[in-house]
Length: 315
Length: 242
Image (cartoon, rainbow over all chains, first blue to last red; front, side, top):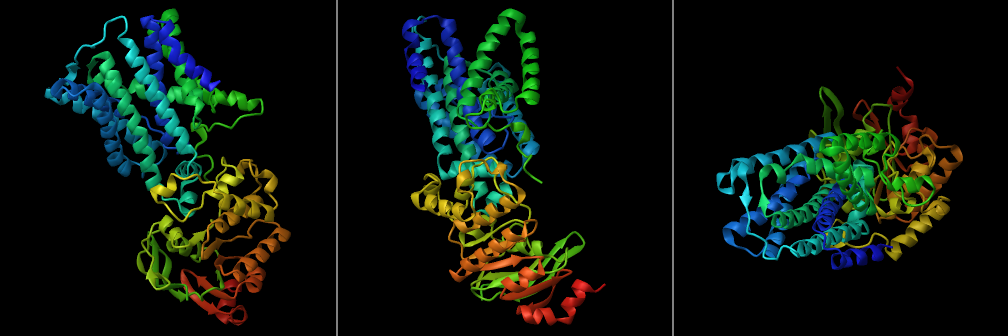
């Protein structure tokens, strides 16, 4: 099943050249990357970030600046973007991961906001106007295809990385921290080290995909690159799909992006947001484990974790 | 001698929870830590295992200072503890629970699989002893309170710890399970593991422990063999008087 989907996705552009369809799939891959990377600290470790867009924005601006001012080849800038994001995560994580629950969430929200203001106010990086990037070297009828495969590759690598980590001592340690941080420390887990590693890994991929998406759109500005809507969408997708599972972020990203398209056509942009708000409320009450937990109700499959009862185990 | 406390002080606001506590624990023994509620036993555990900073004094383990270490660094030294309120990991399976305890946090170890053949064998053995083999792949949330306590105790046997600190291992569990736990502690002690146990049940303390330390109002009241402690006027006063 998994392999079939992957093969179909790889072959898709061979048969379908429709620019709009390709764009929707690229958006899904970008979101899979964002949600899956969020999932490592957010879903597996229990540290819910409201500012994951920060790393996406850092990546986008890194690529824009390197390409425009230093003429660095796009692919190289993606890697640098990932590394820079991880570096910020290392510094910020070391300080902020001492905070728990809502305090951590607010700190991440604040940092993403700071990121936006920094780029709004630095004139050489275009301020509010942003940076216009070099035009795509590809002809218009195939220009989306490299970005299609690029984002598919990044989304796959992110998913694979998170999956592999969950199978290691590190992954088990992260889950133990989510279940009970104090007990984890008492069992010998270096909780700070575990959390910081998870945070560094989780920042790398949004950095890369931010860079790739910037060169795809050929334009960056602070309001779109650091938009809180990204962070909100990430949470919506994670909750909808199933937090702390590998399939959840993929399912959540695909469902939300496709529903967004449909709703936009049927009920318009504003109406769409209202519907998503209602869906989120419904999920919180009736299906806190996400769509994947529907399966659970029929008695099989691993139970996804709910962001709503993460600390319910504490006394 | 394993642990040595020298004039250890711990304050909570204006309340002195540990007041210049000094003692040594004999090497290889089962040492009991007793005292009325609020006498500072659990605080002493928290200070010893790096969960709380101290306000004065020193703690030594085998002549090295260990106060100021982080909780995981204490475990890396071979000292592991249980908690008074059970803190198993509810959404992890029993097997996963048992694979969590570790004495190393090196990156090279963190990237390994947690389920080595050796660890798996040990986990299966221990689950066999506590009669939970059949539930190995079930989440720990299915366990009752007593079973959770048993699993928590089992967790501390998973790594080759030299010293195990138990915070009321028999509180809230039925008497037959209690005696099973005590037999188990004695057997592990004969194998060379040292224990420091907080315990309320006097009968258990007197039968199980080789050595007893009594705390009262944050101070060390007495220390000695079970027989001596039973005769100690001050101890009897603290427990039965007022």
